[in-house]
Length: 121
View 1 (spheres, rainbow, N blue to C red):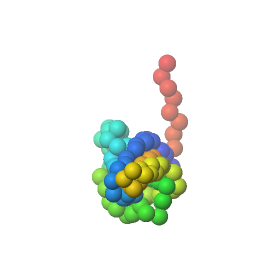
View 2 (tube, rainbow, N blue to C red):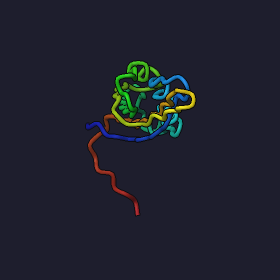
View 3 (cartoon, rainbow, N blue to C red):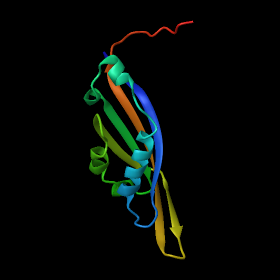
View 4 (cartoon, one colour):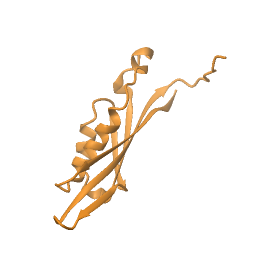
């Protein structure tokens, strides 16, 4: 058995008015996870709880993301969330406010048997 990646999704989220990095990160994760449905679990008889979910959040100020809050927002699996420098801040001089844009990469992994898959021709 070996842990294997089964899906990678990307998303973008923002907080336009509150400069809230966690809110932008949550929106980016929700954007990413709403792109997919993993039917493999029921097909192979694997519990969603066996899945590890690795989330990387890119924002300009990673220390302002509450990674525990982001992890708790995931509906399935064991979450590991890391915030790194990335994303984008847009400063609005006229209104003296910063819009925060976060990017999320969500990777799901499960422990699968070591076997070679041969494509049918």
